Image 1 (spheres, helix red, strand yellow):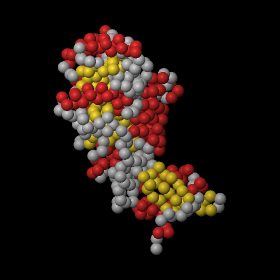
Image 2: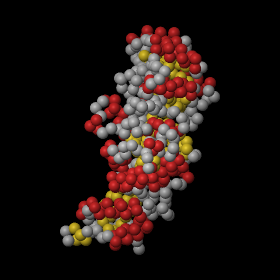
Image 3: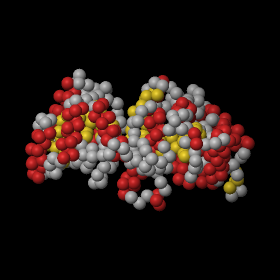
Length: 473
């Protein structure tokens, strides 16, 4: 297990820039606007041969005891309490500020090991600020430039020493990767493979929660992990970037992605909101299963339908969760109405699981996770080729393809080319003449006959004969 290093400091000193550099990708949003980071974000970082868990935090500000800023400060304090080493970052060009001194005083009271990073030290204007940093009482400051990558060798030395003091957990180590999981290995076609083979169980599941603003996504994340891991509150738009929360549920490692609320494109005019939406869309592409969270008091808004369509187009395994279920009267009737609406409004995801939850009260979590694992299993389903071709003969006999230009189309062969999501290749006599409604008939039949309810299905039609016919003797 790697050691944990937290980057802290006042707003706009470059914490997220350094975080992105050390984790090797643009994991955190970066902008000139102060206070962009609100939640604490974790990532697996590397400097040379040194691997460790790095935590980016919200900028420390003078705050009231209540309100959003106070809750952001609490998240930073949690990161400090859990860290093996705290990196206090200052702006060397601006010099020490009263807020830097106040933060240093709080860190001394925390009892955690602290090192001072004097950022933006690439110019001579930073020399005075570096000298002032000695006043904080944490030893010699480390001049760095997060933007240009200067000073990383000195940072390597400081973290290595802290790792030795913490029992050597930081050097090398067994740090889990924060990158996108690789595609699974396909298994032989001896039966219907539902993706439940033991090697897959050891892989972390990427689970992303999306929805409109203020439907309760962050509250649901906290209900899942059982702690106040991400910021919540009545203010819309609290979450700005996609936060990854490691979690273990019933011996399965899961990476939860909390995302910013996604509004209709025409309403997104603020530049920071565009950055947040882009980050949320990236989290959908990284996901394996996506939970679309609806508001039970206003379900299936136009934006909900667009988000569901986006998940289908990206090929992720969808689950619909209906939040604020505790506010719904006549729940049995309401659930039946919601399922009928889902079938009518989302024909491309026919059979998608729909689970009522109350994120605030923590109810419905076991049912939601059962639906998530079932969706993942279907998403990895592989159907044997002989069974597929028996099915093709049956559906072709039951409903033959229509004639085109007076000539009957011939369905010759079908095979499954991939999983995640299930993708099939159909060979026929004239692929361009196969009508779109007949393709939908084939997709719906695949869904019904092989139990692929709710997952996206890809059907590619090609011309030519059975590619394996020549091999037969």
